[in-house]
Length: 433
Image (cartoon, rainbow, N blue to C red; front, side):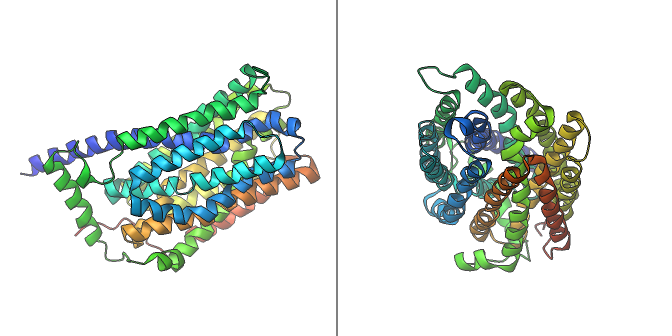
C-alpha cells in the first residue's frame, strides 16, 4: 500500500510541476524583463530625452507607486475571478503599456506609462505565490518559489544581452532609436503570454482534467490535511489580513530590503560603467550577466537547504547580512574585477533571501488570508523600489558617483537583517498531524 502511495505521490508531483512551473517561470521572466529594461534604455534614453539622474530615478521608481496602490485590489480580484482570468488580463494590459513606452516623447508620458506599468503588473507576483500554494505542499514551497523567483536573475541573464543587442542593432531603423525598439519588441511577449495563460492555466487541482481522479483526490487531500495540521495558522478577513502585526512587520522588512535590491538592480548598468570605464552598450550587458548568474545559483541552493532543514527565518536573514557586507565593501575595493565580484556577492544574498522569506506568511496564515497578506507585504515592500533608485539618483547628482550610494543601501540591508533575526514569527515548517 505504501508503495502504491509513493508511486501516486511521485507521479502526481511530477505532473503538477511540469504543467505549472515552466509556464509560470517564463511569464515571470517576461514580467521582470519588462519592468527592468528601462535600466538599459537609460544608456541612450537619458541623453535623448534630457533626463537627469534624479528624473530617471523617479521614472524607475514611479512604477512602484502604481504597484503599491493596485496590488491588494489586484489580488482580491485574482481570488474572486480565478488565476486564469486575472493573470490573462494583467499580461495583456502590461504588454500593451510596455509597447507604448517605445513611443514616448515627453517626460510626463514616460512617468505616466511607468505608473501604468506598475498598476498593471500589480498582483502578478503575489498571484503566482498564492497559486503555488494551491498546487504544492508546504514542505516543498520554498524550493518551488525559489525556482519561480529564479526568473528574476534569469530575466537579467537574458534581458541584459537581449536589451543591449536590440538597442545597438535596431538603432535608427525606420528612424527610431534602439531603446524605443527595445520597449516595443520586449512588450510583445507579454501579450502572447496572456493568451498562453488563458489556454494553459488551471485554477485549482479539482479542475485539472489533465490529472487522473485519484491524483486530484490525493493532492487536494494532502493540502487540506496540511492546513488542518497547522495549529498556529490564523484565518483573517481582508482588513485583518493586511493589518495583522506579523504581516506589518514583514512588510517593513521587505520595504527595507527592496530599497537595497532595486537600488542595485536599476542602477546596475551604470554601476558597471562607473567601475569598468569605457565599455560598449553590449559589453555592459554581458558583464551584467555575472551578478545574476551568481544570484540564480545561490537562490536555488539556499532555498533547497531551507526546505531540507525545515527552517525559514535565519535562511531569510543570513543572505541579507551577506548582501549588506558585500555592498559596503564594493566601493572600497580597487579595480573593476573586485567591484563586480562584491556586487555579485550582494546579488547572491539578495536573491537567496526570497524563497525562504515568501514561505513565511503561509506558516501563520490560512491560504485565503495569505493571498491578501502576501499582496500587502509585496505592495508596501515595493515602495522600496521607488525609494532605492530615487535615492541613488539624487546621490549621484550630488556626487557624480553612483557607487557612493551603495553605503546607504548596505546600511539599510543591515537593518533588515536585524529585524528578520529578531522577528517573533514561526521559523519552521508546520507539518500535518
